[in-house]
Length: 320
Image 1 (tube, rainbow, N blue to C red):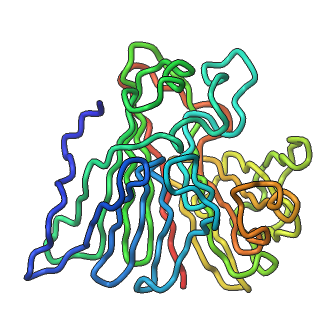
Image 2: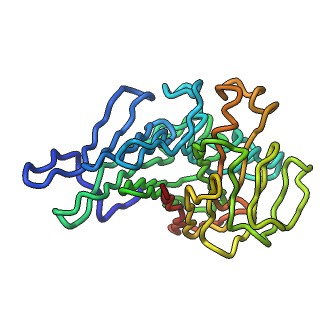
């Protein structure tokens, strides 16, 4: 298990003098979730299944920022369609053969494993109740026997989700706890909720090389400063020089997505036919109200030797 020198405290009732963030655990088994609410009303909900953030409300709790399918499984029966699924240790379909991840399912096992809630922590300033951090852990001992058989390596993951008044930070810490090195990929598959995909664009990727999965995984260079979505989009933008990608709605910036130690970003929208073909995507026209801008390390592989640690993540800023 990962050695945590500063393990977060257990759940504590806020003091009467300075009301702090409220953190609650509800449900049972694979359907358990952790909810955190700031005194100002902003909130997040995180399922222990997959450590999947399924709700993030800003603007005093009035504005939902994440898209969640009406048919999303939130009972632990399958990976969640929507929110922020955690993709590890492989992105997309695994290599067909000859790689340690080849026997794993698409997107790996992290999003379909039950994580441990490690606790909460808040600002060291007792008078500052403007943020709360929730930590979740997944270790070799916590994954299914099938996953252990497919990927028999010793690892530790700590996933930190920090809610602030106008932002959400999600960071993964990956540690090699075994004797042999291993390779992995990592992605935060964030589904953003938007009003109208035809009035939405993505900025901050001009000049970046990308792999277009809709066009037979061919390589291209982005020539648009604002990427409009007019059909199915499934692109992996590689080695992005700038840290921030912006989602724009009706000519106004809606979200800033700031990468931290992650070089790649996937832009995805299934559009009409693919949305209809996914059994857990609902409503069928839900593609009009979502866009995925997914930060990660998916172009090639990250390698960790014994005892080494990788950390990376994102800070999403709501610009309403």
